[in-house]
Every structure is written in C-alpha cells, then in structure tokens.
Image (cartoon, rainbow, N blue to C red; front, side, top):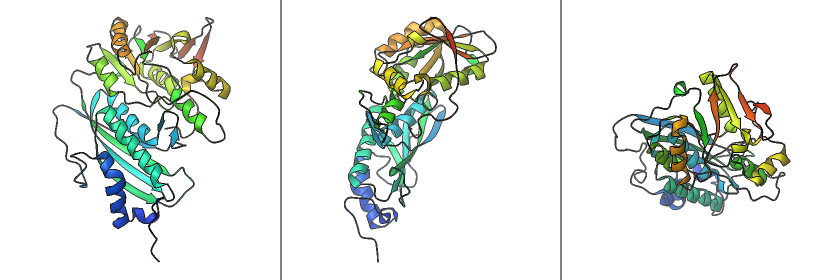
Length: 340
C-alpha cells in the first residue's frame, strides 16, 4: 500500500521524485530561495561568465544539534561555503545546496532551516542557484545533512600564498575566538549548561572585501574552523618553516568563552570558529587592516595576536600573561565532534 502523505513530517515518498517531491520543493523550499538562476529548476544553473579566474569550493555539514545558540545547520552551510571562497580572495557568485533529509524530520523544522539558509544568503549577497533534495531512511542522526558547493570570481591583484610570509609579518584575527564550538557544545544533549554564548557563524565576504580594498598587502587568509586558531598556525609553521609567537593577552576571548572552555577542560585556541578569519600581512600594513576591520560589524574586536619569527625548529609558542611560554600544537583529534 503506498505511503500516505504526512503534513507534519518527512516520509520516504517525499524523496521519490513524484507528486510529494514536487509539493515539497514548490511549497516548502523553492519560494524561500527564489531567484532567476534557481527558478528554472534545470539540471545546471546558467551563470554569467565573468572575466578573470574562478574559485570553487565544496563542503558538507552534519552538526548536532541542528539548532544551537546563534545559528543552525542552514546558516552554517551558507556561511561556511561563502567564507571558504572569501579567504581564497574570491567574490561569491553562486552556491549549490543539497539537502539529505531523514524520514521523520518535521516539516516545520525543515522550513526553519530553509528560512535560515535564505537569510544567510541575503546577508552574504549571494544566491542559491541550484540544488538537490534526497530523503533517506531514519539512521539515528539528527535528521538533516547539507552539502554545498560555491563558485566565486578571484579579485584582481590578490596574491594569497604562504610562501610570501616572512619573519616580522603579523597575525590578525577579527574578533573573539572559540564561540561557535562552545555554543554548539552548550546546546548538546547531556552537556547543557547556562551560558550567554552564541555561535559566531557569519558570512565574512563583506569584511574581507573591505580589508582587501584598503590596498594592504595581505599575504594569507584562512577561516579557523575545525582545529581552531591552533590548527591554522601550526599549518603555517610547516608551510613557511618559520616560528610563530602568539601573545595570549592579545587574543580576543570573552570572559564567558574563557570560563566555558575552562569548565570543559578545552583550549580555546583549538576550538572551531565560523565567523573568524586569520589574516597575515606585513607589520607596516597592520594598522590599515585593523582600521578597516573595526569599522565593520564583524571586525570590531580585531587585534594583532602574534608574529612570525626566524627560530628553529619551526613551532608555535604562546607567550602567557605571566611571561612564560608554552607550545601550541595541532589538536590530535576532534575534541567537539560534529560541530560543523
């Protein structure tokens, strides 16, 4: 006997390609994401061809829980993809979106996620231009997996390459670290506690564009997601064969984030961020970058947190508030599973 329609939850028939699939898309998803490239619902979106070089990225999102303070998996998917393009020096042109939905997911929750996707895309100034929807059997997950791809046009004059980094170059971050990972952890079942933390998930392309528009010679950009700031800096020591000194007192970290990390026994430097960017530039350009960043809502707490030095073997050292030093290592594994 055919599976009966359910007005409250996703059922397998929603993924069968028939009438229920058509209704799900036409009534619940497409109207929220509507634009001239998506609306034809063809197998491929036709985008205007820009001059210059094209950047492309792809990602998958499996965060648990789907909603957390300050965001959700939908916002995370858009911001993460846009940010991967932005730190490559690209202006986003369009995103693809694939929804893998477990049967039993509530229609109301799905609509909230699509609304969030649409809002984040508007913030970033980018369209969802193509996509796909699949329904799978319930598998004990949290009900929704999202995969994305993004295409962007590389900005003229951008030359981001770790090989250009030299001793004396400074490391800048645009604001308080560790907030995304800690916010997700605070919302996770069995680990909930009272906190004012919210995820920092945000599209960084506007902020990065304003920094690059200053003419500063930015040598490297990276969003410190899994592995946090530590992971990025250790990667850079390996790429450059230079050492890094980080000033603990200069690292933006709110008291609530610090206390939460201490409570969980976690190092904030290793915790994922979704609205932060690591910037490397010559020290002479630092003030120009900080001035531009602090004029933007996502860069008000921007700070120089460290510098590259000629010291061997190449390593990352944290200069503590007390004047001591300790090594910063890349996290061995994933301390906070499924946070992005």
